[in-house]
Length: 258
Ligand code: XBP
Ligand code: MG
Image (cartoon, rainbow, N blue to C red; front, side, top):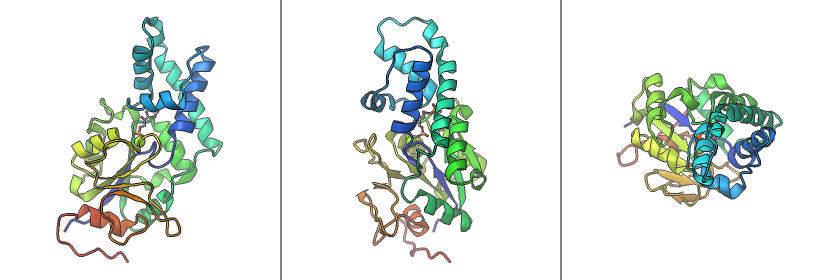
């Protein structure tokens, strides 16, 4: 029987719906401040989300959406991204971005029961820290792996291998929470069992490699909807279910937490 030792969380789209009303808005503010008439609509942003990382996303936009780009615009990317981070942090501190349903409960329960916690995000470190400071506690997370800490962003497994290495754990000991196809690819290639909570941008993606796909983690009074996978009698995601998912395929009795 495998004993659950750690939960590893993606940030954007998983802990909170940060993309549409957070990162997207912040990018547009940075563009307008720099005198650029670029506007990333909700639909365009959905397409751009296929590229992980803000700097990489702007780079891709220049390549895909303009036939003749002034090379100087590429040099502007770091500066635009820095301004975007500033606007994103402002949006976060204004309190407009809430955690998704069930996230706070599950993380608090895990911390209180000695399950180790980690973050694996493509987003820049200040963004991840600000969200954790606003709604949780960054000190609860033993590893916060973010942004450029690895060379290759998701869907590369590099960030998950980095987290496993820092936690000094095997992939069998951990459960991952993600919201996107790119995130699932990254986790799966690191041999990690993954739970997906979909959102509007990702609900039509291919999650066949995920152990469980949910609308959200749910609460006792707001049960989750299961899109794929087996949750037995569970109505919302808790540590018992986390343990059982890790042991799927094995013949272990359901685990009882004190
Ligand atoms: C989400 C991302 C990020 C954010 C922007 O990754 O792709 O690029 O949209 O973040 P994840 P930065 O879901 O893995 O957290 O602008 O800070 O790069
Ligand atoms: Mg995500």
